[in-house]
Image (cartoon, rainbow, N blue to C red; front, side, top):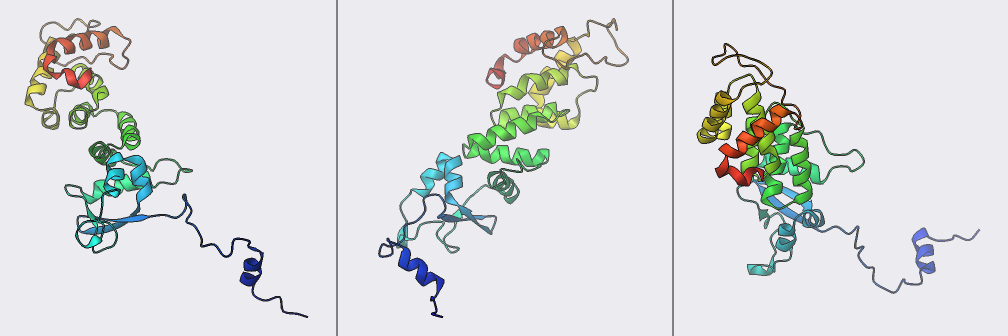
Length: 241
């Protein structure tokens, strides 16, 4: 029986384009970049970062520097990301390179804040929107949401969080003051003192503050507080317009 020869020879003999050099797949020939964050190296597909952020897209098109070696080409010439913490960077990478079938990874509140921080910094609109939505699902942190609204330009957090601070029964805590700042806190305290639940006749002085039904933007209590917020926070328009 005649030996048919190696399989590779058979394939080669049937390939009409055997004389042509192979071409690179536009979708599955990946180009990687080396990044350094807090003295740790990361090898990341360039295309995913460029797809998410125009800032990275521009970075990857810059001409090589001295020595004709582009940043990110190898471990000796990584792209440095100053003022970036590893914990924030790794959270962002986990989101960007997640398995789309399994959906977004399960992050803690602080991890979503890390993603919001870098997504805002690098203009990653999809990741930023995802983080904003996930943070919005966390209840009971109105002061923290006000701080996030200011730090990362999320105006949708501002009014609902102020309403919660003003309408709740518990007083402001030291952490609340730290998050929203003294000036904002004084305005909130002023509104809390002026605000009375119309469903309770508690008199001028109250032993315990009565919490109002402020769970829905459609009720009168919510609308009344919002009206006073707009009068009081005239210097904070950029946060809730």
